[in-house]
Image 1 (cartoon, rainbow, N blue to C red):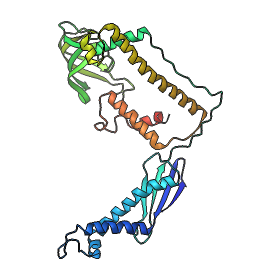
Image 2: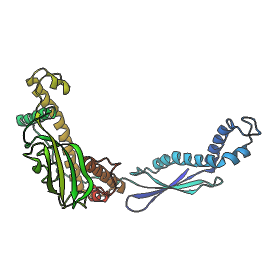
Image 3: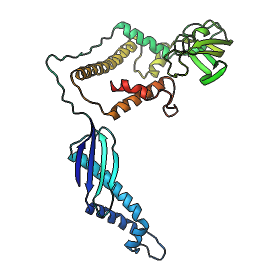
Image 4: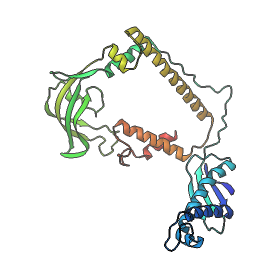
Length: 344
């Protein structure tokens, strides 16, 4: 096998590989022999079909398999020989597949940049340290009690922090729009999970039917709705208030804690928070080091890496609005809108 590496632009590389005819012939003959032992053709006994007949019948298929196998096996070897680490999957171009000549192909890909950090004793970064206070523990416990609490129906007007169950249908100029309706939708008033004005209009209401108007923000992710006022017909079906969980045996079991009283529970929460903080400290310190390196070192980032980061950012944005990536159209959070931030 002969391989040759060529630098194209920036981080793009082209690896050309030639595989000897002998290697091709050996693999072709092996596959042909395997078929010969199994082939059943009219007029011939099993295992006695002449090679020229087999080649006429199966030659093209065997050829394609052999070429593919040779590429699959030689590519990693060629990378090792040239001491190259690709950042992306290759684009393979088969340049010659004449079985009487060396099989030749080229693989084009991006590589990771070679970074030689420039640091000096004057280069500084932040070694992050986070302390946990009693107030932090109190807030963590309060959050747990809410998350493991139960919503129960109440017979009164709605107020902030209540959960309401509603049906709604929205329209703009009497025309419905995508994602304009929902049934049995659970909404915590004051959570600011809906567009401005929507939740406020449901406050101080009893179960009933009514309409409200709300305007989509100027920076709304769906550009055709940004800054547009919509009218929503609301059916307020239930009002619920939260009864926080109690610090007891049931809660300990749900949290998989081997504790028996409130004091031990608080201590266990503190220990868990310390473990989380330890991870955060390391991550933030690493981030500080990376930022310092970026300020003191200049290098190109592979386009494929930037695109992968942009795709992760888009996926996260879709999840925040309850959309699955495979169900969202390309016009919803276009990938191009994340490319600039991904490059940073």
